[in-house]
Image 1 (cartoon, rainbow, N blue to C red):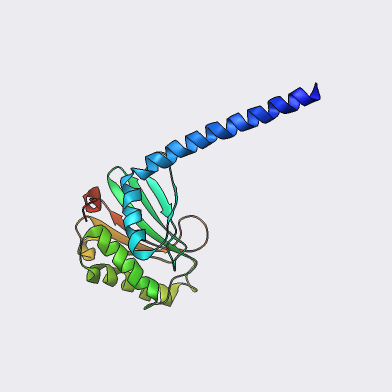
Image 2: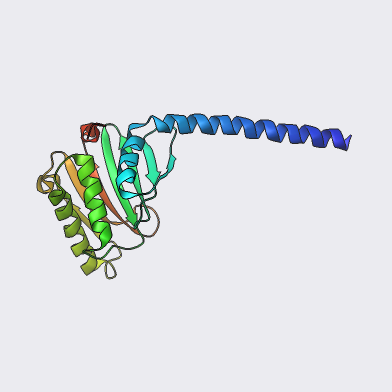
Length: 179
């Protein structure tokens, strides 16, 4: 009796694993056709890295990105956030600064000079305040970003320890696939 129960349990486990594999494959297939995943892959093609995960609604995707703790792209109600994560703020002039500038310029279709200016402002503020200010948060309002409908924030991660730099776009048309 215990042998047949063991065989049935094994069959059940294999069937469950097969069903989960099919479900996982369909979620991965959905992520393959997702605009934010396409965007992340275009960045990764140039800068390195790979897709780590994407949710089934295709409104949030995380990528590895060399010199960072990761890159995430989130889309909600036509607005998109491009977020770079770090253990601590990179020092101004670090190689990752150029990587972030290239990625932000690729996404916006605008000049690297603008993205560079935003990142440099953030890193200069962070260098002065990071260890002294437990609530460090630096924002540049949309009027000063020189990009329509964009805001910029850097500071402590929203969840958990670390540092993040976020470009916020109120208009998802910046993320056309032909850029």
